[in-house]
Length: 221
Ligand code: CA
Image (tube, rainbow, N blue to C red; front, side, top):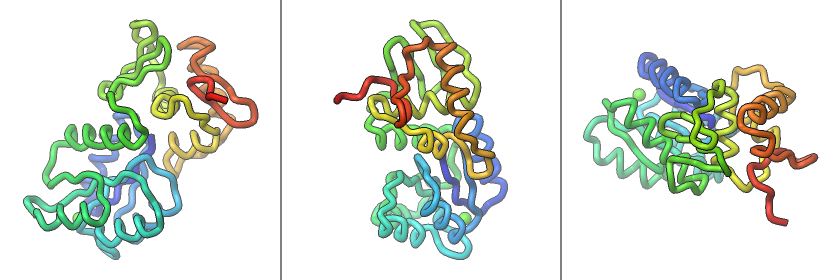
């Protein structure tokens, strides 16, 4: 899962980035509204964390522009403390959730997880595919109840596929959702990760749909 942080406070940005990367997200960051708007319009994200008080273009305007451009990505707005008018304005502009500063990063991550889960149509925080279970809260994966250790990239890839179980996901889509902007992207590495995941979780967990991509279940004809 790939997340964009649009936040101008350097310390908070660094902290958020480190926490989210530690929780298995690919993270991009923009420090002003103009860069944030551009990234959100041109790159693919599973969720965006958007501060409202931003240099260049304020957060509400950025959000309003994205929604007018038809960008539907879930957006969590960061508001000034106790500013009910900010919350109302944020929700009116198309925010999916909000959090008032200062906040606990655990709460931010929990809300983000819920946003991403709802956007992909998953009601539970535990995702299953046959004998494989992935707990999005702990980041733990089990096979028939036994813990399996995945690398960060393997986890990102499996997590994306499990959030989109039953759909065919192309290599391009995977690349867009598991790497941040600065990563040297190579579609061949996707095949390498899939091979490694199959070694750990069994050959049938991920189905290759020739010419189209990968799926966690055979798609219905
Ligand atoms: Ca700010």
